[in-house]
Amino acid sequence: MLKRSTEHRTPQQLRRANAVFFFLSGIGYATWASRIPYIQKQLNLNEAELGGILFAMPIGLMVTVPITGHLLSKYSSRAVMLIGGVLFAVDLGLLGFCTTVWQLVPVLFLLGASRNLFNISTNAQAVAVQSLYDRSIMANFHGIWSLAGFAGAALGYFAVHYGLSTSYHLLAVSILLIACSFWFISGTIYQPPIPQPKRKLFTLPEKSLITFALICFCCMACENAMYDWSGVYFEKVIHVSKGNATEGFVVYMIAMAVGRFIGDAIVNRFGIKNMLRGSGLFVFVGLMLSVLFPNQLTAALGFVMVGFGVSCIVPMIFQLAGRSKTMSSGTALASISSVGYLGFLLVPPFVGFVAEAINLRVSFGLISLLGLMIVLLVYRIDEEHQ
Image (tube, rainbow, N blue to C red; front, side):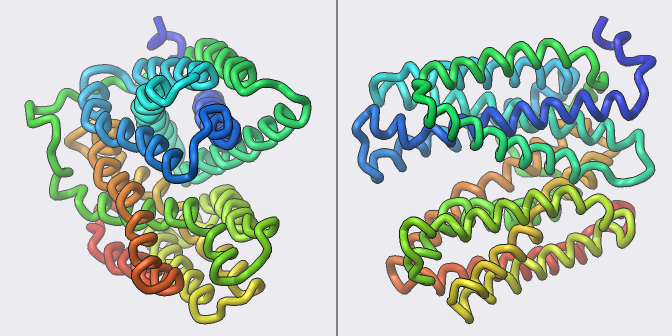
């Protein structure tokens, strides 16, 4: 029935339906993030305890990457997306009712697992819609995710301002996500699974995807390093007041969102490989600018460059990997994401270790080299993937 429901839909209609799920993913994640300080206070956690507990979410995400790839080889990405979206929403609603650490940890683990299921299948859907167009539209989907993140943060601000409890805030958003998922799922594209040969559940990406996976590793490492350390950098290195410490993070996030909305136009004009090379250079130059000239203006400008740099790398790599002739786009994306998420997990703690041993400027200087690595890796992309 769902397969027949999209037979007569236009590419524009399918694109709008898929965009809805990117928005749901973004607003759901930002809603959770906006309430972290209040859950910390509710459970009386210090920063170290909170950091350890929050690690449950990326662990859940990492563990389930191969499972997601397996599911996408057996079922349509639309079915997996619906299941992942509903599970993500249910977990979000449960978070506000956790009254002990031992309740919060497993729910966060499941939130990471369901978010992984939701995000990879949503991107697989986007690759399928992209195949209907003769121009790039992939970055725009990720721009909608960023826009939803701002909307979720704003919603969280107003919920706190008007005294809405964390439990009812998260529950209300959860119900909204579930309702929208069921309402809009029939408008998304049907993408039949491509059965894969039997293999071990935990394997490295195929040789043809290794370069894509390494580029994702470098980009996701830079992204999460900025999420975790940009505010600290402004406070400890730039020496702004605590009230202004988020300035670096804010300009970075705005630049990343803007970059995603203009990225498709740049790709359509200059090509994906040129976009990727330029993005890697922006990451390198931006971080080095903040390291070599550590004052408020130059560091902010550097963070803007990093935001533009990382904005479109993963969407474009997903677009390239989704053209695989030997596996479904969902399986390909899950394969390279397994390596990419390692960068997301491992590099930010590395920043902290180097900062403790030497200083934070040296940490950011080392992270900047990942931008150069992206440039070099782009040259390894086969001509057939252009």
